[in-house]
Amino acid sequence: MIRFDQVTKIYARSSRPALGEVTLEILKGEFVFLVGASGSGKSSFLRLVLKEDRPTKGRIHVLGQDLGRIPNRKVPFFRRNIGVVFQDFRLLPGKNVFDNVAFTLRVIGKSKGFIQEAVADTIRLVGLEGKENRLPHELSGGEQQRVAIARAIVNKPAILLADEPTGNLDPATSAGIMGLLERINAGGTTIVMATHDAGIVDSMQRRVIELVNGEIVRDERSGGYVTQALPQQPGFAQALLPQGARP
Ligand SMILES: Nc1ncnc2c1ncn2[C@@H]1O[C@H](COP(=O)(O)OP(=O)(O)OP(=O)(O)O)[C@@H](O)[C@H]1O
Image (cartoon, rainbow, N blue to C red; front, side, top):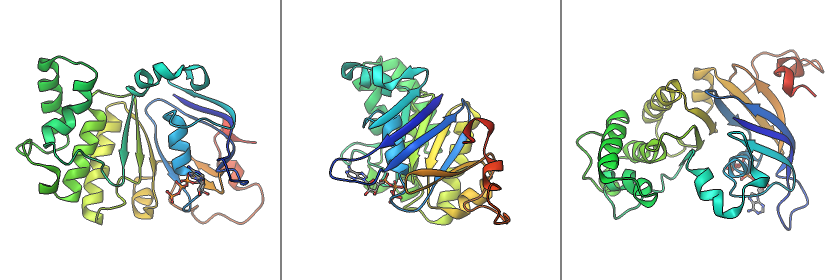
């Protein structure tokens, strides 16, 4: 579903790689947490998956396509398969809930009937029935994030990328958002979520990929925010890596 082969990203005017020789594979239906300190490369990774940026070295495959071979004019089509959610919601402030969720479907030319049904279904899924006519500023932070998630999934993307989606929310609201993401994942959508929220990662026990200075230092099938009670022996952490990820 997502494959990185020795991917390095070095930004212009920067000597240190934001990502260095990253090799990993994320399979269909996985729920993956991307963790690591600020500046460790999480957002850079997500931007590369979306083809918002190009790797300096290495190859990236997403949904069976080599991103290096997708011409610019076809990038918008490619992105239709990927939903994205951010920490700061990024809703259209002058549009109500329904129109925020419907926006992309209108841009890509879906029929009125399709939009009516798909948007209503998705608003129900995220628990915002009855609030279709509210403007973003008339919603709580958690509700705004639900709108953003609805907008991201209304076209049934195969992959959902989330960059600190609970970063602006209190713990109870965050838990609600995580419940929603779990349901979306249970429906077959692959989810990759960058987060600093240790409580969420610890409680969900999903795959955890940890970056330090742009390098993968941990890839655990079912882990917490930090490695749990590992003896400090060289080579032990590597034993946790899935076969393909072992150096
Ligand atoms: N457009 C850019 N130009 C130059 N350097 C950049 C750019 N974007 C990110 N970087 C650098 O790349 C490194 C990785 O940044 P990135 O945003 O991927 O980290 P992050 O793990 O997402 O951090 P955070 O948790 O704070 O969001 C950092 O050193 C950052 O300063």
